[in-house]
Image (tube, rainbow, N blue to C red):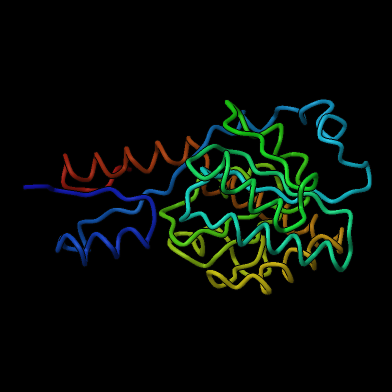
Length: 240
C-alpha cells in the first residue's frame, strides 16, 4: 500500500529491499542534512585547560552514544597504541550510554589511559567541542547514515571511520578521511596517527569534507530532496 519509502543511505536502501521485500525502484535515498548555521559557533572556551590537555597535545574525538555497537574499546586501544609511539594524545568521548559509567571507565583504567581519556557525557551541542578535535572517529559495527560524521565534515575535520553502512557514502578514502575494517585496531591506530602527524593532510581532508557538507548535506538540500520526492509521488512527475 506504500507508494514510496524514504531512507537516508544506499546501505539502508539495500537492507529495506532485501529484508522488507520492497521494490528497490520505489525506495528513495534522501541523505540527512544539517543547518549550516550550527557550524558558525566558536570553540568551547577553556576546553583544554579544563581537561588538563596541553596546548601542543593532539586531541582525537568521537561523538557517539556509548553502546557496544559503537565499539569505543577499539578506539581506546588504538589511542593506547598511538601514545606508545608519539605520546601527547588525548581521547575525548562525547555522549552517554549504558557502558559509559563503570565498565568503560574500568577498561580505560586497565589500559593505563586514565587522565588521557575524557568522558564529556551527553551535551546539547557537540559542535564547539568537535572544533577542538584534530581527528574525528567513528568505529562502530553498523551505521545508517552517521550524523556525527556529517558534523565532523561540517566542522572541517578529517574523519577515520569503519567502512560500514552509509559511512562510505560520506567518507571517500584519501579525500576527506579514511575507511578501516571493523575491529582492526592496528589499522585504526595507523590511520589516526598518520593523520595526526601531518598537519597539511589534516587541513586538506578537513577542507574537502567541509566542501562536501556544503554541497550535499545541508538541511536546505535535504528539504529540497524531500519536496522533489513528494511532488513526484503526488503529481507523477519530477518537480521542475
